[in-house]
Length: 173
Image 1 (tube, rainbow, N blue to C red):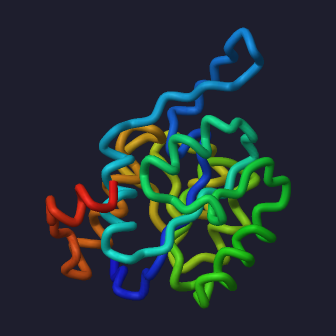
Image 2 (cartoon, helix red, strand yellow; image 1 turned 90 degrees about the horizontal axis):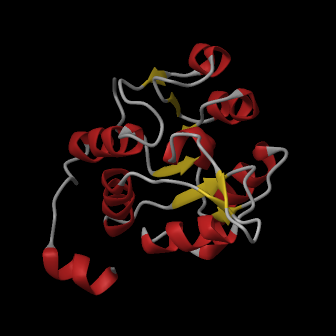
């Protein structure tokens, strides 16, 4: 698959960046488990200048905190989305991107329109059947267990940008 046109990444949280399990603490905050390798993949994209967005129906502040540690800027973290196309359009406009230059990761019905509008819609291996059918690429990896890392790494490797500079990494993160 030719991924030379990809200039940015956007993804859902539950079922993509996490395995979809949501735990509620005694204060009512919804807690999620994230894969550290997925987080590193996001950091590599950010280090190499790719804009990255989170577009999720989730609304916990813990999402903002986790994504901040991966380098996603606050203005590109869209929570409580009910029509993800709107936030996707804002992200593209903010970064002067054609939607076809963005790889979008989604795992369920609310993601399908954005997956189709993007240059490469990716669905984790354990996504909903409708999302898999709409995807350009169904990952070999499930949500929250390597899907983001594998696909981001594939893009960066194809584009000759999967390189690690520890000095830059330390300065950025």
